[in-house]
Image 1: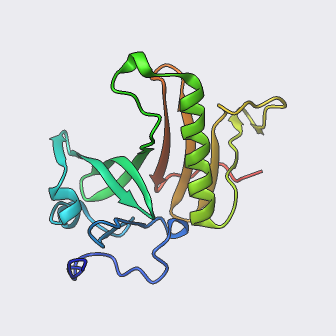
Image 2: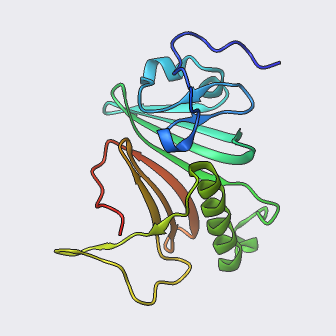
Length: 182
């Protein structure tokens, strides 16, 4: 039976990504834009990970946590008490023991899995993210590695592939004013 939710955690009537709220299956706790850093630091989810504090930023690293039925490594960043960003990397059976096992095909499969999971959580597909020129431009021949996103009142949900880092991520960016979806 999950632990009782402490009163300082977000009541979660929708408990969904469309609200900017993530629920940790393994603890029953939630995190979202209304949960401050000190309150999050007191959760079981945070205590199971590690934290780095520097220059007013607190970064929590949570390994192998389950969110809405999928396993992720999560990186949660606060600036002061404000939640700024959550980066998620889905774990898969394709993950190797070292960089020698890395393939671009596996990372593109992870990116597709991120997008499928997010679409199920928000009830709609992620759209191609426009390039920010004087006016937003959607590339004509965007490949599978092109960023995709969804815009919400709380911020933006992004799926992207970092070609230099060789990894795919799902990011929830809070409080940003992204360009509208095309």
